[in-house]
Image 1 (cartoon, helix red, strand yellow):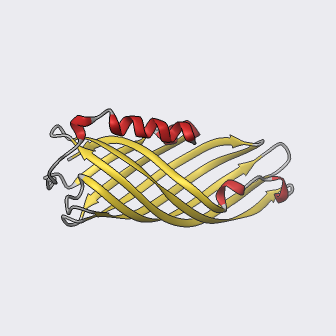
Image 2 (cartoon, rainbow, N blue to C red):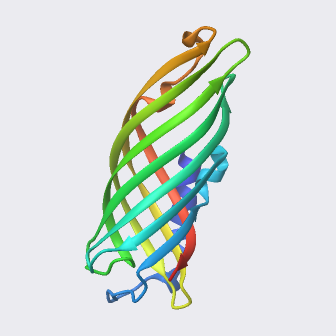
Amino acid sequence: MKRILVFLLVIVFTLPSFSQDQPKVATEKNVLKINTLSLILGTGSVFYERKFSDAMSGQLGVAYLNYKISGTKFTGLILTPELRFYMKKAAIDGMYVAPYVRYQNYSLSDNSSKGTLSSIGGGALIGRQWIKPSGFTMDLFFGGHYGSASVKATSGDVTTFDTKLFSGFGFRVGFALGFAF
């Protein structure tokens, strides 16, 4: 986790061409992005953001996870809707805070059991999105998350599945690249 935070800080401080002294209102209304950090966890994550007003936008994240942890293979879908409130009324280009909800649904399997996991949770983020005149977009965010998960066995013993990552408090960190249009 420390390495990821250091990486994100280096990105923020080594990209001065993306900083803005004066807030500007983006002429674009849509952003399509891919979360590059989620690829480390075997997750393909795509975001679509739509500007609602100068101070607010909405974003929907859709992700597909295919990962193995402690002998358990997780495969499935993640949906994350969020509202973004831009601090300087410069939606979709600037600092923001964003409450969100997350739903996860996975198929689980290990050597002796199969099942499904459903998780619901939510949290809040703080982030900064930059949009270059060419439309190239960078979005750096982090925050907290709280979730609750339930597991149902379809064969074998449900107690063999390690689901601690999906319940309780955790962190959400991301660095997305994309294009505004």
